[in-house]
Length: 365
Image (cartoon, rainbow, N blue to C red; front, side, top):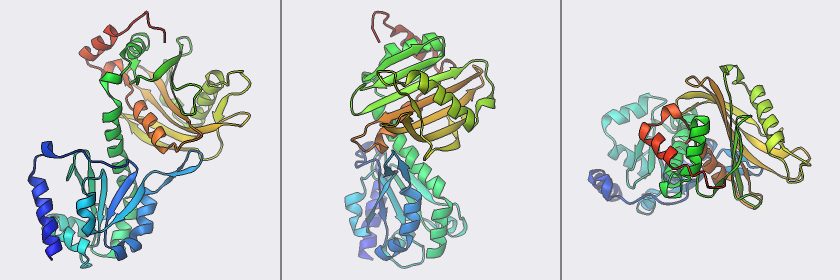
């Protein structure tokens, strides 16, 4: 009981303290600390791993998140980490079970007991840019069922929070190439955030294609392309069309220096899902790219959607070539950059004026 009272005091105190006094959460983006009783964690481990430790192929398998088991006695040490999950049944009598019972009121306990889709999330509980989730149910069996039933929502919550943190670090006006963004806005009616170390590798006005490239001819390249189809319809939003359009574009633009080979979509590990992209219905396609003659490859991510205002189909695509490195964080960075895409209609007048005023015709891209 003394342990519970100690952490109750800590929690209550932190809830009363203004967010402005909290330090930024720290740690790796792909780590989630799980606060649980040791025996209960062993029973829930497979369920939690199936939610958070999903693997992506880059082409080697890499986990989206890695779970780090912690006990209540570790709370002082981990409470400033970026990602935390607190999990226990309500009635087991374990330290973490008692902890949850003490820190939530009766209305929350009732929701834990009666709602299969209820779990409690708290932003910035002990630190800024932190996400803490409490998951509980009446029994261990029902708790495991709740975790598995809500796996998509739980994973999405932590992916979104991680992306939000990454946006803060990537979207920095100090390192923004506004002269390129202004050029894209003026010539094509859309904009995407361009980091300082990206180059405008290709701007094909006739074929509606723009290629942004980072660290060309190095062992850690990142490629982004934007392609659009004018006077289009949503009929293009199917996986066969998306594969055909992407392969056609990469065959034309993503060629080796001697033009002997070009990029295609690899047959293995291709997935696609319906998603919301900045308020629009979109198809998210993820997989691996390869050369038509083999020899090199890497992961890619692609959003394709229809924009009602411009009557255009847009295809936004990011690829990684980094054979010596883990690529999970790199593909996330590219994903976040793709999500910065906006059409002119979505920009304020001040932002439009700012970008257009930044165009420098003397700069060689």
